Image 1: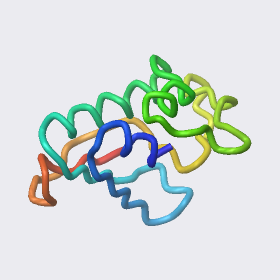
Image 2 (image 1 turned 90 degrees about the horizontal axis):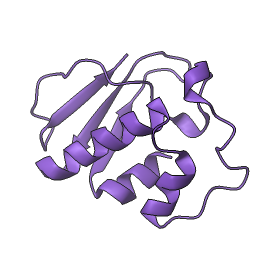
Image 3 (image 1 turned 120 degrees about the horizontal axis):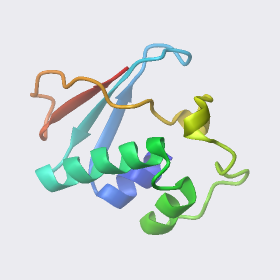
Image 4 (image 1 turned 135 degrees about the vertical axis):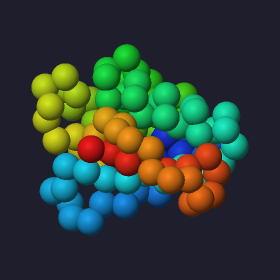
Length: 105
């Protein structure tokens, strides 16, 4: 899913998550302000359900992975497949390139 977000937004995204079961992760976005905003908007839309993962893959021009991700319902709070990120939280200090990083709770 993160690769579809990167392809669609044209930004580089890096996820820092210390342990696979951590509830927090930091996402660093490197790109123009437009790419940064598109990345953030896309992640939030997938999380709140206003954009399906299938739609994201279609917009990115990528095939859905085998097994798909259509079973994940973000409103039920289930752990998302393929390392999907939790909702955005606070913004850490800029300086990681581009407009800055995003800290996810």
